[in-house]
Image (cartoon, rainbow, N blue to C red):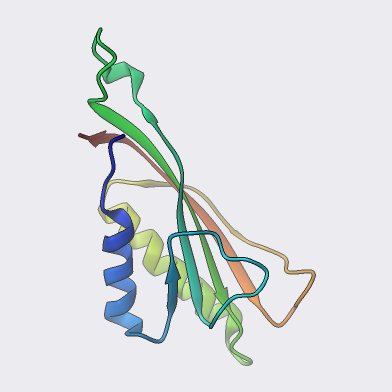
Length: 128
C-alpha cells in the first residue's frame, strides 16, 4: 500500500500554531473527546489508481481519502475556533495537492456545548 505523510504534515502545522494545546489523533474519536480543542485525521480509503496501474497490477499510484473532524468547546468562541482550526487543516491539505470534497458543521445532538466540523479530502496521484 502506498502511503504519504500528510498526517505528520498537518500535525506539524497544528503544533506550529497551537503548540501542545490541541489534541491530535489519527483514529476516530469516541463520544468522549479527551481534551479540547481536538482533531481527528483518518485515512478512510487508500486504493490503487487503476489509470496508472501496470499489467502486473503493481501499485504505482494511489488514491487516498481522509476524513477530518474538529472539536471545540470554548464557551465564547467554539464555532469560530473549530472553523479556524478546520481552515488551517484545509489550507495544509490543499498545499499538498489534496482537494477538499466536503466541509460541514456537524450537529451535536448529545452535547450542544461542543462545536464540530467535518471535512473530507482526496488526492488521486500519490506516487509509491
